[in-house]
Image (cartoon, rainbow, N blue to C red):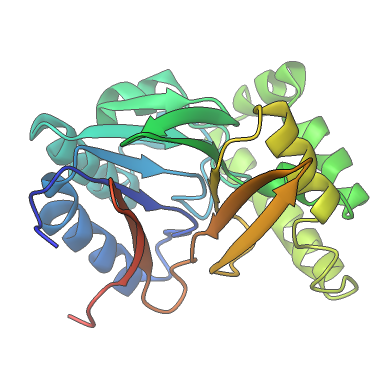
Length: 248
């Protein structure tokens, strides 16, 4: 495997925050040393633990990560960013600073001859009806405008309250409820006209699954979270490879 052969890289669910500086260091090292060799870097959501508005992009952590993304983009690698359930408020100012193109969720791309459906993944968790209702509420444009009109400190406090409630609710949910469902995956593949590959994050359950939907075969790759060390997917003309980051 040649490091400079044409390929794309995929990451998601890094959940970068001030409380986990080691993971931020891993991220910056990945962006500085690995990502510049790729044609395209895809970030499929939840790069940050939370994003409460583009007016926080100059805060130290945000500035460091945005700067590293910008170096990747300035070096000639396309950077493409998809919202997750934690950083869906990242907007045009964030994208401009990072040199990133924003991707709709879902998006179908051609990866070296293979049609590939890209998603964050949370919309396929159809058994978690409470989450889907909450997701629809916070994605409402009026709700977002009202939230972004608050002072940064008030937004941060409100996010902390919502996060605490979410963590408490998770204690009462089975892992299966918070995972994607077969019906959710099938619906996504049908809507995208049966692509042979799906890549997503969100569930923190890295694996490769095989699906057959209405006679069409599809491989589903689930990205890993970066709570321990992190890993990424490398996609080229020969297929998909899962690669763990080194310890140092």
